[in-house]
Each structure stands twice: as structure tokens, then as C-alpha cells.
Image (cartoon, rainbow, N blue to C red):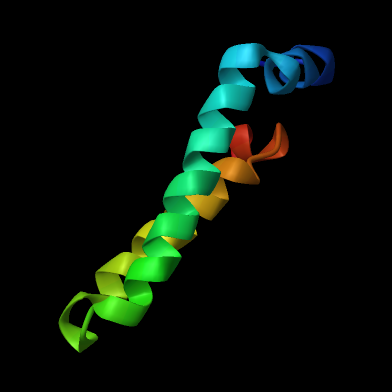
Length: 66
């Protein structure tokens, strides 16, 4: 299934998409705060989760087809 640029732009402006992105941003901030508290044992996993969350926020139309 191909998604046009207009469809992708509409999705970005959708209130549900905006709410989801806001939630992801809040989760990233929370996880960044946790980085200070976790020891080396949880550091790698937490960094991976932050990276994955940032990837979701920055997804582009082209990323859908990579």
C-alpha cells in the first residue's frame, strides 16, 4: 500500500497523531530522567528505548518504504 505525501501530511495533523506524539515526547523525557537513576545494568536498554521513541517521532513518508 502506497501512502501519498498528502495522506501522510494529513496523518501528521490528525489530533490522535498529535496526542500520540505528545505522549511519546513525555515518555522520552521520563526515560531521560531515569538515565540518571539507573546503573550500568539498565543503561543500554533505556538508551535503546529512547532511540526507538525518537525514531517514531521523526518518521517520514519515505521511512515507510525503506
